[in-house]
Length: 213
Image 1 (cartoon, rainbow, N blue to C red):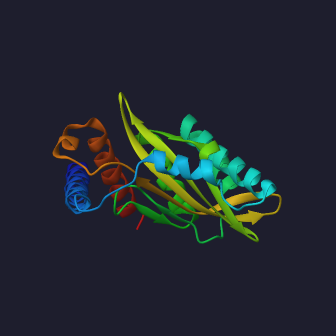
Image 2 (image 1 turned 30 degrees about the vertical axis):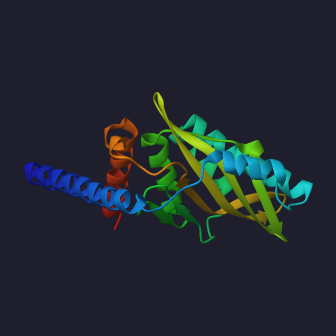
């Protein structure tokens, strides 16, 4: 019986890996036709205009963004519950879109699992919080930040954006999006270790999602 369960588990993992590779290959080919800007463009934009949010709103949004960065820096799954309760609301329609399609999550529980997998399997996320562009309208704000994901000795630029809502005296996230922000991919990217870390992350997320339904 245990042998049968083991075979099924291995088959699911292999299937997830194959699917992840297929999604990556499709995205890689599609992205050959899409130009991306560099993080310096966003930094230049921030230098010209940091956004139209009032100073107190900008300070609150950047405080939330700093807390998000702190979580991604420490990457401690034991702190995930407190991290989530500080930055998200359980009953809100939360959405997270990852840098690798179809890497996404909807809802509080799925968002928590998404972040947990990021902390375990993704690279070292570094957002340039001070250079963020913050805009707002009433109790809603949106922010865009340049940054990078470090995979050992290799860095890959990323652009982060988010929508936040005011909750009492602080701001909480309603939507997060990570997007690779670099030159067109080249075949040499297939030999970079970060590429396969991303594949492992997608496969693991696919496997855990399949086992929760």
